[in-house]
Length: 211
Image (tube, rainbow, N blue to C red; front, side, top):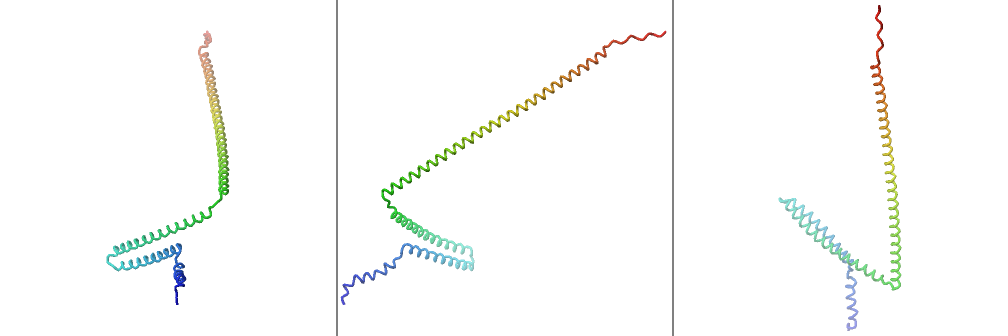
């Protein structure tokens, strides 16, 4: 039987399982992550075994230190592999997202112009709102400054009135004290004059000598 006419079909059939079984990047990443998880468990299991062996040796601490170094080296290697896989996975997802966006981002000239006008209109509205807010804040700040200035003026006036009232009261007290001193001085002078008058009054004529 001549098989030459069937060779293309046979080759296609032979190649089909390889094509069908080619893993996707996501499946490959999942497989690598699963492998790393399995190896990490194996590292921890070996570390537990090494620790158990160390406790049966004379130099326990040295053995434990060696076991820890060995475990740390293996774990760090797995972490590096995992980080590389995650980084590649992120890059792949980012590239896929960009491709998806590129496929969707095919606006016409009118759509682009409309979008530009809408953006400009939004910016103008935001600018007007910002200007109104700035004006409102400036107005409120000026009103607050005016109120504060008025309150300061009122307070200063009240303090000045209080000082004047206190000074007038003090002057009244001083004036009363001065008048009291004058009155007392006049009284003292009158009493002194009265005493002096009594001392300088001429004596009466002596009584006649009896016969």
